[in-house]
Amino acid sequence: MRPPALPKRLRVLRRSALRFLLCWAAAWVLVNTFLLVHKSVFSERCTDRKSRRILDRLVGIRALFRSNFENVVKVHLDAIN
Image 1 (cartoon, helix red, strand yellow):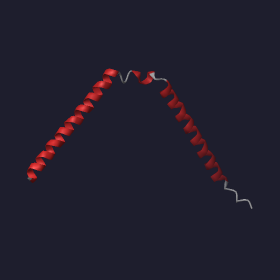
Image 2 (spheres, one colour):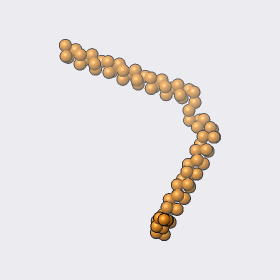
Image 3 (cartoon, rainbow, N blue to C red):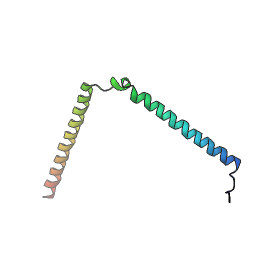
Image 4 (cartoon, rainbow, N blue to C red):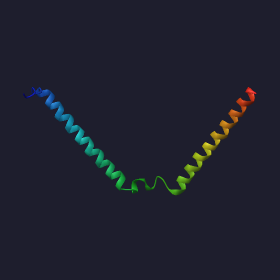
């Protein structure tokens, strides 16, 4: 036995949702292709010198937090003892 046919409105909605999904996926692939294939888009933004400066800042911040954390722990341990 064949299932009952969907109302026309539901069929239209299902088709338009499928079309929207396909168009969105195609646009996503197209944009990512242009961004990833053309490396020159990101070449100026991150040079080796800039990367080193960023990493130095991150390592410095991490060391600062680590030393600050150690000081806080010492203060609390001294307060307990």
